[in-house]
Length: 203
Image (cartoon, rainbow, N blue to C red; front, side):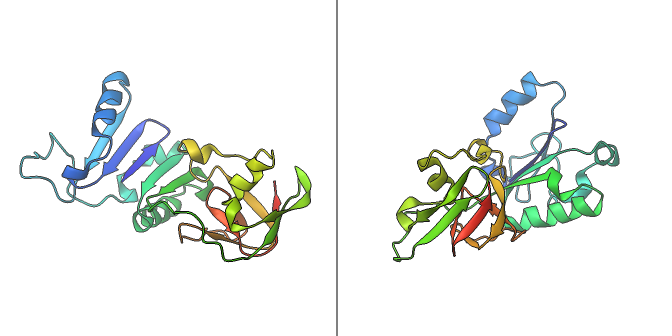
């Protein structure tokens, strides 16, 4: 699991034997003098040396973010489990970081093809396409539906900018294929959402 600040401070938390992107992070340390990496291992290997291979055995919390960095209003990017990111985000907002400056990417098992339950709904993109578009399970997530109709929606989520596909729900409701509901029911994350009723999106 990892947390990255736009200011160049990166923190990773994992068991030592499951450290993700170790070689990639090492490469960036060598090429970016201003990058600081802090590794938290809750289960270090016997061969791992504190201060050399990792920096802490503690689970990561928002307390690791310095007051100086908080004052600079950083953007925060998180990847990890729902529980870890929820706790970290709550700690950051309590210290003054606005929730809209915190971006998350959830570790989940990829979903398979949608089961055909026979349900049909309409999706209306109120800004770019005034006509309701029919949706069935074969059309996949709302982002796929839009693209198949030639409608451009934000989709930076596909290159790691999680939640950049978010659009406002004018009416109706959606459900999420990963089983995790959005924190804001008025927002639709189109890359992983499908209609649960006829829905109108501000997009």
